[in-house]
Length: 422
Image 1 (spheres, rainbow, N blue to C red):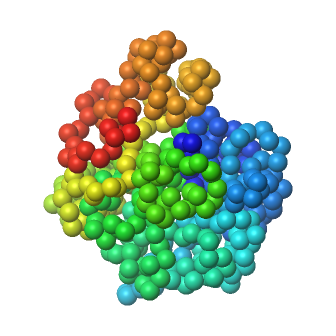
Image 2: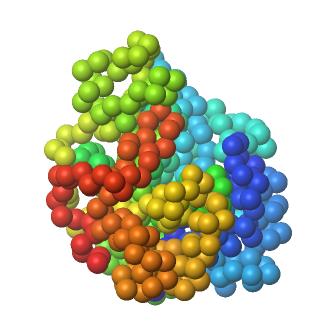
């Protein structure tokens, strides 16, 4: 069974998160998207755990949960994210970590241990005065079946490799507990090929999740992980990741990294953005005002990479570059808002005919797509499906923009990705 899983989302208890991130709304839009498993997010927040207990029930002792009212056939994994703030060397470090738990009882036990490091009621993604190794110890001592890994590892702030407050290596961050970390979340502004350039990441499984702050389908599931599993359980999903088994972990769904808000280096106030190479020539100073620009993920990876662009390891998990269907329809239709009535009408026609957004983006033949939405939208979907599209790179908190009037950039590719899953 092909399983689509997005394991990093947030609840309404996190800052800057939509109130529509309640469990039922998430399940509704996850069904549209084609997700089979989605994270609850924010399990450390006591009020959110109460809602999880109220609205979800264990799905046949699988370690996954489902809505009590049975409205949607989406399963939930108990997940969360925390921010650790600590000093290392002469620098303050602020690192976000994803947490996965096999049960709500495990989430209780983890939260009880983490409460001494910070106020868990303050935010769905709490700030803890703990080092990364301390966090690993507390989580795994609460329940050894829990999983911890770096969240959105490359964003400039609050990440493992962040240019502002991160580290140059995973070992520097997690110290003697590094061997307990077996996965890394790439984040929206990087993809698998960019991460393959660092040999220090070779033993880790690279995963992709949306980090959604709203349940709309242009946010939820925009990045995800695709498995082939006979039985869908917490442990079968975790084992597929831990073993990096390409027969069970098929590929990740990645937005184009240029779509991410921090792909290029830039300065939003001056509307200045540029590639890492150009930024280094300017010593990261904005040509408009002279202030330090926000160093983008592309530049940061170039700084730490010990392999050339285009390198691909043998037997690596593959990937697919996609852009949310709503945004494709909006662009072709001349709409600014992907949630406009005109966009929703076409989106619902496609999903209604073909079952889910992922089916539309990955599987449905050209002729069938064209019969429902016509040649223009169909052609745009196929261009994205074939990774033949251009995105104006995002920078300094500004999302990238899909531009179908421009040809796809020439890639230095090592032929691991779309074609082996076509």
